[in-house]
Amino acid sequence: MGFFSKLKEGLTKTRQGFVAKIENLVSGKKIDDELYEELEELLIQADVGVNTAIELVEDLRKAVKERKIEDSGELKNVLKELVADIMGSEEFKLKTVNKPTVIVVVGVNGAGKTTTIGKLANNFKQDGKNVLLAAGDTFRAAAIDQLEIWGNRVGCDVIKHQEGADPAAVVYDSLQAAKARESDILIIDTAGRLHTKVNLMEELKKIFRVISREMPDAPDEVLLVLDATTGQNAISQSKLFAQAAGVTGIVLTKLDGTAKGGVVIGIKSELNIPVKFIGVGEQIDDLKEFSPQDFVEALFEE
Image (tube, rainbow, N blue to C red; front, side, top):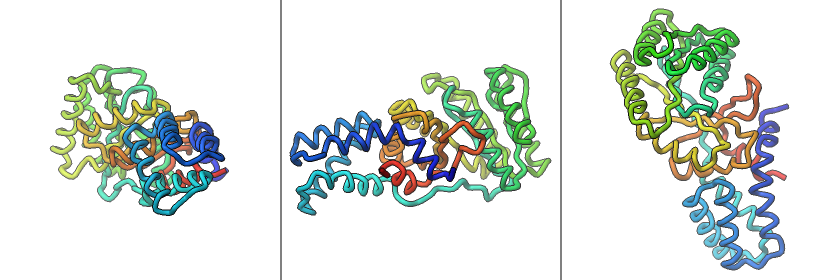
């Protein structure tokens, strides 16, 4: 199965809860204030976000007026155009110019952070890159073990300390190892911080201080892993992590198991942090670079 087919299949629940409902709503209806209000409500339910939903309906009103649209059946296509405008056409690739390229991965527990690191490492290995992993989540022995399992599976070494060790020390050792071994890529795991835990956010800042001291141009990327099934919570998490960690890109996991895929539109509209990867399945090669145009096509396709 090609990735577009997989993406389309993965977005089935979102399409049913979003596009199909829009079609049912507008079918044979008169275009009036009541219809616009119902549309706005539907967009909010699809986890597009309140601000984005209001903006989309406002732009829809303008387009209908300017184009003198009277057939409500045309509204779906206009909405597709507006969503495509929000998403844009640019595909944001990872910056991998420096050697080693340092990628820090952040996010709350349960979002699929360690799995994402494993799949990302696999993508790099497939491209012939030499990859090193750093077990910077020292709070949970399970996190270190899980990263090692992925390391063995993909064929990457893992730099680790004991559970409870200082994460910044693990990061320091991994930077030295990456330089000594001439690694192409260093991917650093971090503890699954709840954004309310101030001390954990401070520790994240300490990690970044160590990185910039040892490698002034690093990190090259700070990827925030978000669970698509959490919908609007994903947007509030993004805002907090963006402040604390200078997030450069988002990895949205579990897009295949949720009706809340509309959150991708809200993230792009409200945060302007690019979604760089999406996960649409359990397989090792189910983490793919995000194409906004493919996303819009797969979401609105019959």
